[in-house]
Length: 136
Image 1 (cartoon, rainbow, N blue to C red):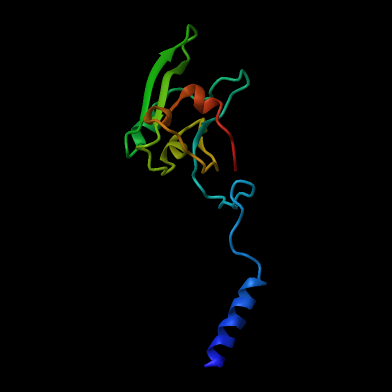
Image 2: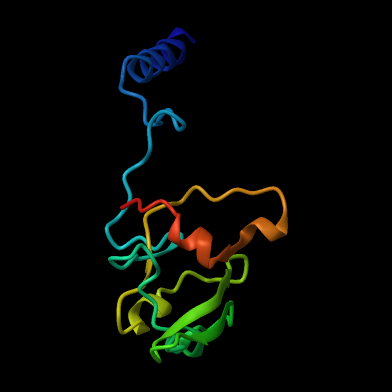
């Protein structure tokens, strides 16, 4: 009768003095894999604008059809995205848009913290993609 009690006490003391397996989340972040595909962001060019040339390949290759692109043209004939929007609730984070981009304008970063209160906040616009955090 006392032997099972001592075995249980031994196990309790062994676990009690061992290093915990959990992390203190808000203060400590977990390490992510280098292949992690988190939130989207835009690379900037020298002028601080998006490097996107509005080719439309990301829209064509997207399996969930979550990217909206309106193409505008400058006076010198270069194209740029007038409206670029990603509905991140529909996105499956496959990375096809990043792979298809010929100028590496759109990237998927290492950010995994993605919480909002309304559905409209999950729409990533061109401005929010330019100001997004580049984690990872």
